[in-house]
Image (cartoon, protein in one colour):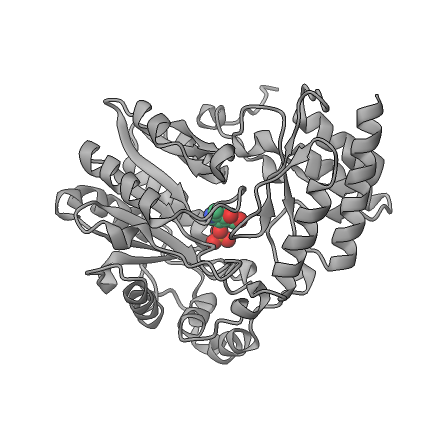
Length: 405
Ligand code: PLP
């Protein structure tokens, strides 16, 4: 029989967060092993339940949620997103500028599919949340990775960004707060990115899904608030700020100069209507969430559970010889560096697999985030303190034996 091959469109598409090492971990679990998982930013399994008011409102509205809704989403949900964009000082957003999706993930793919022709280029950070690179590739485009600079707290290297702009560049992706680095960008950097987009007529895609997951009293600025004359597409949702990843409720907001983008917007509308609408029951949680229930604040405030876990994980990691790490100001992750002189790793996926096999701790390798050197990995600091401590003790032990090899 003829082999059934995957589409050639998938040849350059890669999403290693749920890749082969996770498959091996699942197999080990089936064999009865207990794995400590520091690999996925999914708060609920670690006791970070969604706010009760959200859950109750979804239950309350379930009987009215069994039909399709408008392709762009429920009126009340979009109205709440509109008000949220006003609070974030994003000007001129109307209901028509808001699209509700099955998580931000669906909208990322949709926004790239509607934009890119073969050969078009998009500036994507390195390291990145790899769905961005994957979505660009799937849409026939090429991700040109601009470097984020570890030495300067993982800030985007703007000269590198400028240097990678060519005649086929269409857009810049900005992930702020950043996954995997935890960096939070100051206004000065955001303004410079807006200036670059302005000069080269690029759209800015701003993934701000962690905009409330902020430590040490930090404040978040939406890049769209700084860019009235540049088109910005801002992404956010319930997955992280409201700990409701499984509801698959996200949104995107078009703002800034859009008059020249009517054809693109028609494309977006067509893709939104082709998938009929996003999951309706979860949309009933959006108004409730944005209407003031912000209990993530307690978790990230000094002494809150997430803040304590970030501190502990950072302290334990940086106490390991040859390991350095920028302390995250936002999000749920640490992205430590292993000094290559002390840890001469050739293949970081193999390194992560060995850690899994020897110590039953699951991480994701840096190359899974389009980081080109095999010298980083990502740690999710969601597990309860004792599990997190145990995992880091095992990582410490694994690295100690690695050094003696
Ligand atoms: N963007 C970033 C930066 C993320 O880290 C994630 C999930 O981890 C997503 C988007 C996907 O979010 P959603 O659950 O809304 O699809």
